[in-house]
Length: 92
Figure: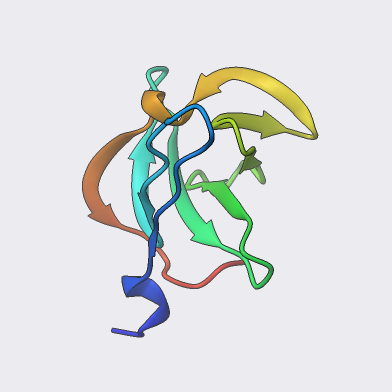
């Protein structure tokens, strides 16, 4: 297992929102969509869809909200449920 896959994304924003995500871990949104968390080379947090027919990428903003194509979504970090599974450890 690579060191990169063991990195945890440990952040909290100025509002005290706990923003801990584990790199390579699969999370599920309340609508059932599964996403894998990834830390980019420039320390941004992104989440990719696991569905091969979707090329979705969400970003996590400093307030803990998920962005899609630069726009706020209805989701925030607290909506992500850790599935206990690990996806591809490397970013796409």
